[in-house]
Amino acid sequence: MEREFIMIKPDGVQRGLIGEVIQRIERVGFKIIAMKMIQVSMEQAEEHYAIHKGKPFYEGLLEYITSEPVVAMVIEGKDAVKITRKIVGATDPVLADPGSIRGDFALDIGRNIIHAADSPENAIVEYKIYFDEEELLSYKRIDYDWLYE
Ligand code: IDP
Ligand code: MG
Image 1 (cartoon, rainbow, N blue to C red):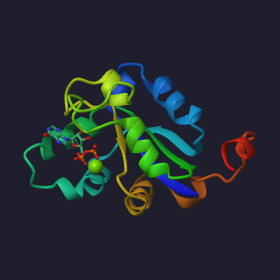
Image 2 (image 1 turned 90 degrees about the vertical axis):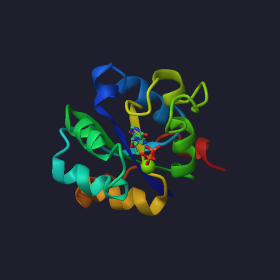
Image 3 (image 1 turned 90 degrees about the horizontal axis):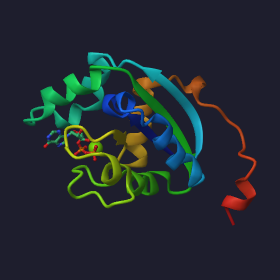
Image 4 (image 1 turned 180 degrees about the vertical axis):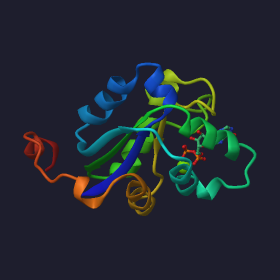
């Protein structure tokens, strides 16, 4: 099973979309194995978004992600990264399909509701910024045998 790291960004929390986002993740069958509300520190933000350092939006991105509480989550399931990225939609809401989180709830690339890691390797690197390994829980969803052949 693959792990994916997700974060409901400050705009998602402020706009009351925590439940909406979790519902979309849960209903497809993903198992939430860790979840917490936190205020991202500048150190965590710099580590998380290191790849974007130097880009024109970098400073604004750090300011945004550290501004207010977020909800961080680790989920597990088959093809978790690819399927989550589809549920999340394209980075720029103008390109995000209707039915995706960003397509349904966002207008601006700088306020796009949710983060999701772009590869299984990055998912691990990213969740380690926010979670200790012992915070990741191991359990079986009761519908497991109906989610997987
Ligand atoms: P992703 O979140 O879909 O993986 P990335 O290209 O990795 O997209 O960018 C990370 C985040 O940086 C985006 O989700 C968005 O919040 C922000 N961002 C990316 N490009 C821009 C931009 O052109 N203006 C403002 N913010 C941006
Ligand atoms: Mg990215």
